Image 1 (spheres, chains in turn red, green, brown, orange):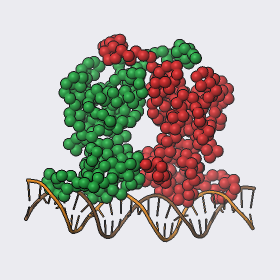
Image 2 (cartoon, chains in turn brown, blue, green, cyan):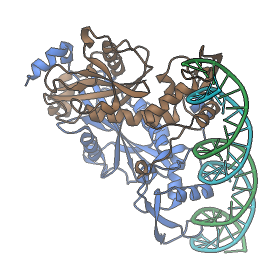
Image 3 (cartoon, chains in turn red, orange, yellow, brown):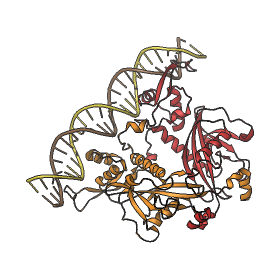
Image 4 (tube, chains in turn red, brown, yellow, cyan):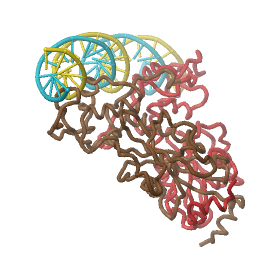
Length: 243
Length: 243
DNA sequence: CAAATAGTGTCTGTAAGACACTATGGG
DNA sequence: CCCATAGTGTCTTACAGACACTATTTG
């Protein structure tokens, strides 16, 4: 077996330039009808006082484990859906040294505010519309996450990751409306969701009470076993997206 | 400004464990009606004699630049479509040390065989069906690339990256057939492609000759300005993919 | 001429969206 | 009683796929 030294020198000595590998997490939730992202206020330079995505160094562990660990450090989020988003490694994205960051995307049901104490003193859920001028290149990472989640709602049952284990069709519709930023026709949405095989399955029960402003008690559903929605729930095409 | 030392020690000393960052490239093309991938035969341990994806260390450059450089080292491929595929960094994926590899996906028109000489002595286009038991975790990386390209043909004009600057509808159909592994109905495909706004635009010309076994001279088209296909060219849903 | 392909016409089933309507329950 | 909401019915339009057919070119 070759030594590390042999390995590196056999290829390219410049590979010795130190590179740090980190994970950053774009954790999204829908609260108060808004899409929100989990941010940390930085206490130290660089970018002191600015908001940033939660993240940190990768240890001797798989990348996804590192992302899950960083997320757990800031919230009680557990068993959330987590997927790799992309890797950001431009030289200069961190002014101190070369840092290659693997970004992960997390989806969580509405949660209470992060415990304001301990490590996570400065963690907060922030509406994505207000999450601007983040530290490092986190604006770009967040933008990539938003693009991804908007697209995935179309052809996967991902929206169910934003609601509790039992939910109403209206709650599901609120997720779509918040993520896509546009209202959906209630009646057509209802029929569409129920017509896609495996998207949701009925629990046979209803909520205890109707809506706050009246109306019948809606039925409750669970996530079904579909991994892909077929046919998909396509949002209306915008000319600007296509060209 | 903090020193590098401060930066690292302020977070986690274990981050000092050396990590190498590499890029690997899944370069795909359609030749002889088959989807093929560019592979390198390894001369050294580990995995000596096995095929591997082309790749190498990231220098002081953006990640995509590194991928483009590695690709250029093995072929004359230039100006090809390149996109990030995913990052693979499980401990143990390289037996020598921790290596985090950012995988890129490249699409190229049919090309002559890689120059058999110089650095690229052992580079070859291999039909994806025969690309098995690759070095490291490259089977998984290739599988991710295939999944991605199959999906992207549906809703993007990516197929035009596999053909020359001018092409016939039949050539485009051959790309879909090779990537999806199933034949498409010629008549319906023809009408569908022409009906999607911005997918292809007519050159007003035809080929010099008809097909080898007869038939009219087909018209030639260029790639249009669409970034997304709307409506998409969906392949028939398979139950196994959905559940 | 025979065979294969390019390109078009037509029909059918499915799905999306617009609109309308009934029933239910909270304030 | 008023009103918002849950859920369903219906109609129109768009599109995918099956099938048929004509025109064109090569061997």
